[in-house]
Length: 305
Image (cartoon, rainbow, N blue to C red; front, top):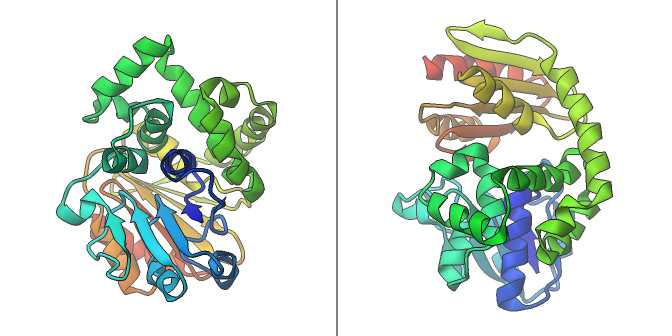
């Protein structure tokens, strides 16, 4: 069983792993949960081996109670899951890879193709051309006769399934992207998703963010899983650190993104307060109990000063 993140990098990582291990059952956790709920654990039980791709789950060790565990990831972490047969994450040695697809490619000596490229672009956007894999991306584009915009479009299409909370579509997208870039770009259901998502993103970004000591703060309420996209567009569009809070009702969500500074210490701060949190050098995402974000944002602002 492959358990993968719901975004483009996670989807492409699962497709890559199927090249290595053959056709496998695969699933994504409950969208929005950066931990394993009982429903997810029950779905994993009965499998002899579980591979976790593109997720730094704080309770991944629970899988070892009933299955062999392998982990391929690139998110910031300081602790190796000791019970795992493999825990491949260059961040454990202080090396930051731009995507889980690059980690899997290196580990299994796979060729650089559209799956690897989409994983990088999925997590880095246009910044993918500033990573150490920019040369490989350019070579792929020249060889395939593609433009970089095609990769950006495909990522947006793949990500649309999780943003509209269609978990079954996320799983279907693993097979879709394995067919090739044309299959993704020509998928009408994903294009309809994108139109739906764009309307909601525009609604949320129509509100002028508050500026606090040069940091942008935006509050919103939406059922869509778009907080990372809203934060990215706000931060990159205005070249500033951005904090976005989404009050979903059953939980608060917080996402912080910087364009030019290391904010990884915010992950430790969030975890020290008992929140589910994760991210990378320039990103922190956290899930909080309802009503907690208003208090925690003050802590985050102080830590960013």
